[in-house]
Length: 347
Image 1 (spheres, rainbow, N blue to C red):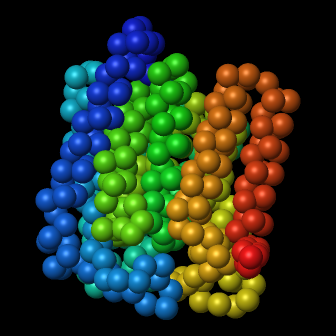
Image 2: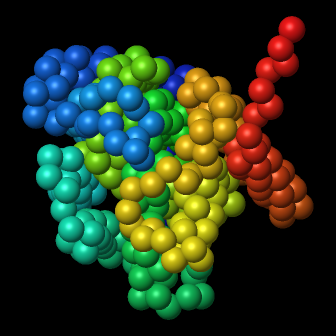
């Protein structure tokens, strides 16, 4: 099994992590700023009936996020005498290219899924055999289920990237929590490096994506972000912190999965673009964009705290209570988004 992050000099490691986070934030912001004119010219997202934006907006800034994440994480890995798995880097770049092609000219659904599955499968099946979540399960069965889960996770991150700052409000709390877990030795060093630099890259992207957004991530960003984030969560599960790995992305998992089942039950083309996610319905029900993303961000901070609590307590009772608390908080927000806001009273 991959060793957890070393805890020899905790303060030194934290300082280095914060330096890497800052470097990836600056690099992401710089690349985003430089690339915006090109994206404006060649990758313009025009609003339609299913869009949350109202004016044509360039997409594709995910190039900056992924470039900054991989560049800083790889540099830090060399310094720390470790390595980011080459198969992960290659799969991330490949799925980013798939997303970029889809941003420019939409690909058929089956083609997209096959190419995504190839990227995710390469990462999952290349992992060492001793990395297991359930030791008594057949390895092939577990890896097949991880492939399916990874394909769903990558796509749900893509589906949920439909509102200004939404992906930032999801990814930053999750990856910040992973930074802390790596610092205390509860997450492998490679996963800690990726999570930390992804956190910084998303922070660097945030000023360009705050309402009203000047640029979007695009599929070139949301798909590889889903892959990298899923890989980090998988490492958390491989280190027997499955509850934490499920709590951290619980809002995205619930919103996207419930929405999918509702669309399937209604016999709607669930693969087609739509505006029926809970966060989208919230904006239709009178919630402002800033209100929606701030409430999602706050919920994710709570989920991160609960995830950290399950690991710190190392108690089945605490884990069950934390899981129930997290589920209750997620359900509360989903129900809140599903209800129309009362119109302000006239004076």
